[in-house]
Image (cartoon, rainbow, N blue to C red):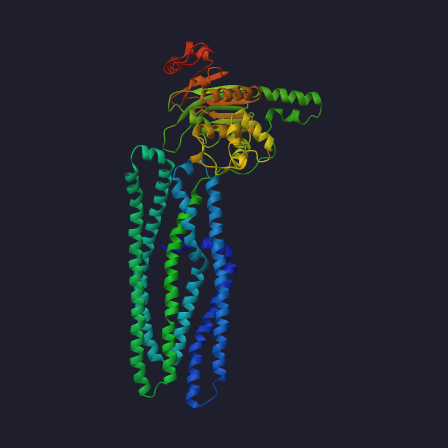
Amino acid sequence: MSSSIAPRLSILWSFARPHRRTLAKGLALALVASALGLATPMVTKHVLDALGSASSLTRPVATLVVLLFVGAAVSYWQWILLGALGERVVLDARESVVRRFLRATVPAITRSPTGELVTRVTSDTVLLRQAAASSFVGLINGAVMLVGSLVLMGFLDLVLLATTVAAVALVGLAFAFLMPGIAKSQQQAQEHVGRLGGVLEGTLRAIRTVKVNRAEERMTERILADARASAAFGVGAVRRESLAWTIAWSGVNLAIIAILAVGAWRVGEGRLEVSGLIAFLLYTFALMDPINELSQNVTALQSGIAAAERIRQADALPSEESAPSPGRPELPELHALKELNELQELEKLEELRDDVPVLELRNVTAAYGPDAEPAVRGVDLVIPRRGHTAVVGPSGAGKTTLFSLVLRFLEPIGGELLLDGRPYRDHAHADIRARLAYVEQDTPVVPGTLRDNLLLARPEATTEELLRVLDDVRLTEKVEGLEEGLDAPLATANVSGGERQRIALARALLATPDVLLLDEATAQLDGLTEAAVQECVRSRAETGAVVTIAHRLSTVVDADTIVVMEAGRVRARGRHEELLVSDTLYRDLVESLRISAVPGAPVT
């Protein structure tokens, strides 16, 4: 193996450790079943001895029957116990990984292909079922059975035992030599399955682009390259397993032939009874059970270790802070006033709160990695409690990074952000996002129904409230046309880009946030719908803050403040008519989109 087995085994054991009591019960049942199995050849010897001495067969035959039925009952109980345990291990692993993924930071999750992450939850966890639930029991039980069989065989005849031990030793050496190669092949096969899932998921997501560019065959070959690599490594593992099994069977069969030859000679010499030889042969045949159990569980253990290592890689993903803060954040300078109960002081508190920006960035610098160049540098920005702030600039100016910082998807490496005058670090992630609503430019559909999508941020909203926001964004006809209405399942394939944007905007309006963040939320809308949406934005800006990233300047010409960004910095700020005069970049952007310099004039 590439590294020591002990640390890798401890990773697998970490999944089984919470269920160690159940594992102990399963081991106890397995040992009882093995003991009953080991007793059977000895009882068979007594049956044969009774035949030779004309004694009664009632007791030994009855004992065989009891051993059979009790052994079957114990084995049945053990299989149920360990089978159920395997499912619980898989469930626990999936729950752990899913929670880790959804609590991880956005950069950590988006760094890997989605399909590869999905395989950690699906196929990798399945490999844990046998490895973490029954392999430990199987290995101990197999070893006990093997030792027990050899001890009882030694009780019958030491010479035949020596012959058997030599064969078992050869088999053990073969397994010790072949198992590391099997483990490595299985791990590489699973890694290629993960890559396959990542490429396939991305290809299916971009299926229209693939077809338009006639790239079906090229993408097929790219996906199948990982499938073929996985199959090749899988075949390599199968070959090594087959060789190991062939050696095991051949070793046992050679041992049986040698035992027959040596045993016949010893019976002829009068040093061994025929019943003893038969009992010894039964133990020899039974040796296949522990050898089989040991080899199967070692193989499962190798696969499980590889899967456990991949699953535990999720633990390395940095997580967002999840500790909730007690209640709505207060302005530190207003804490003394808060303690006063007189009405005029409470009114003064609200007035003072209105004077404090809802959001503020002070000299903020941020990058997407420790070695990456900063995406924004020294940004100062104030977002008042009411009004419309628009952020414009060429591609790569840092507009999306600005939103990532506000939404706390990205942490600054310099400067600080403030909410209600308090630094972001004093707020939990959930508390910050409870004050915000966000509409992405390429808005995805969340799995579920239309109602599920709308209720994502405010699950207690009523049907009347849902219908109201849908009417605001001109989606009423769409809902009326759906057979199941609000409970119609949604998928990217049956919802247009403009409809997805309007669903996201309706969800954001339903949440009634303090700050509404729009990343070109009208990019895929027709003129009439855009006008209705802009009216919603204007209405919202009268009671709260609206921040818009604009790629089409026609959506922000009437904003209260326009912030112009370039190369990660704030270049200028002001109203539309002011910037046309004072900033050449803004003027170039306006001219490139042929927007009239007169506010309110038609856009061509």
